[in-house]
Length: 194
Image 1 (cartoon, rainbow, N blue to C red):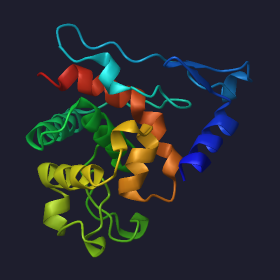
Image 2 (image 1 turned 60 degrees about the horizontal axis):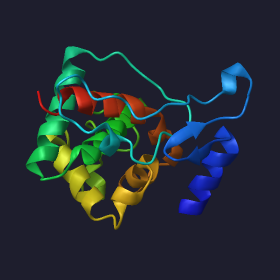
Image 3 (image 1 turned 30 degrees about the vertical axis):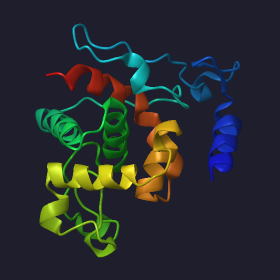
């Protein structure tokens, strides 16, 4: 799977990783990947930017403007990550996953638009053993469940974000997590010590 993901990322985005920097060949503007270095930690945050994106950023990055509720969910994910004894990188993986799965909205059942019985920030499924509806729509519980899954992935710290997230989530769209890495890292830098 790692080889497949790497080949897909290299083939689609045309990226070359060297020394932590991302360089892209000249492509048509609408297809050019975003070349980004690790985000700078917020002033006075004390968060080491190198721990947030240690493998560089893969592909084009997406970004959304967060509401107060979404920001509260970011803070809840960070608090649960700290309570689980995990570091800032784990919070980046969790937040990027929640950005992809729910845009950081604690979603209930969406009727006909629902993917099976998926709910909450991480779109976890009661029928897959993630917990009850009440549990998976609780920010601390759902984050802890995601982080427990991440801890069970051997070597997750050495994986690209999208590989680590996919190992837990088993998504039909495994490459989509990568697009949220920059925003997730910025959110962790901003809120880790707040």
